Image (tube, rainbow, N blue to C red; front, side, top):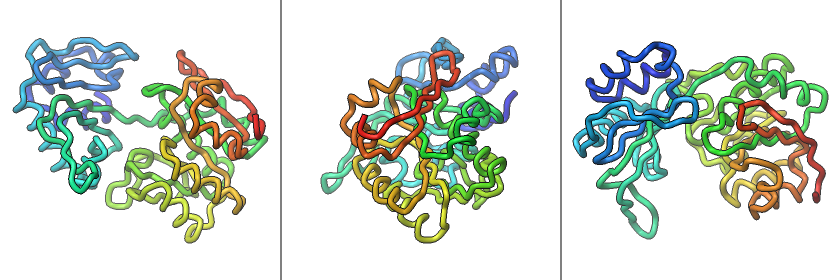
Length: 293
């Protein structure tokens, strides 16, 4: 069984662990997610298809047991991460949480009455970025990786960071806000991001960009999931310092990217010169971006 599957199973009830262990090893290793929904059977996402794993329906005790076990194991587990809707486990795996939101002083504070959990297995696939790296090698410019959720953006991001660091010798600073890219444990990255990479974990991207520019003299800054206007503003300001960005965003193609106001601003600002699109079959398509397009 792959290490990543063992790690996410470690927070599951024993009957789920036993059930998965009875599956053929090849199928075990292709599990991408385990989903627990209140009153429904446990399902697994395998090769982008969700199938029923266990006929026993998930009860509230099961959900509470998993979340309690997860927050006990996670090095960085705290109210701060849970209020963002997830818990990060050692190894970079993430548990997404749905339930009744609780607000304090107008801000999301935590979740109660948990209704579903999504255990996402994080994996490093060495070499997945090789086909796109040639473009970064010949034209080292800020690059945006796009694809819908679950397409492998973070996996590709990790490998390109590694290649930029080890093969090109660039100083790459990683703004790992969700502790998912490097999955540092006691300061040690759980994924290989290369010998010339520096990782800042658990800091909001807007603050992380400024801190990294100030302290680490990066040639590249890598970050996952551009989702906020503040992220865009920080990146635009940092671009004036000559730093390059390697980042990801949720969009299936360039036209979809340009239809969203937050990304349209990035395109018009000319921050990114190269676009990598992860296609449905997981192959990569590289496009050149033109400022003000």
